[in-house]
Image (tube, rainbow, N blue to C red; front, side, top):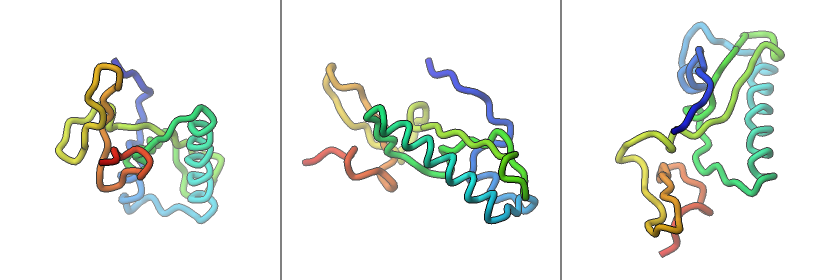
Length: 113
């Protein structure tokens, strides 16, 4: 079972498509820094995210002009999605199956054949 917080604003892809969200450059920079911080956190634990995309950045708060009023958290929906866009990597009992969005996958997580 996977449990995560509910992001009332949806994912970053949805928010950026909305016409009423016209963020300043400082707001975009703050969002970018929050995503970078999350990626650095994962790297410090030896984890490769592998599917970094706006659809995997959940928006909990946003404000067009005040960077401090924005909160974005990184997730990975490939853990729960069933789609033909994803490739199952690993097939033995000792290897957990990993779903990878092939089109945007990090090269280091794709199987070498």
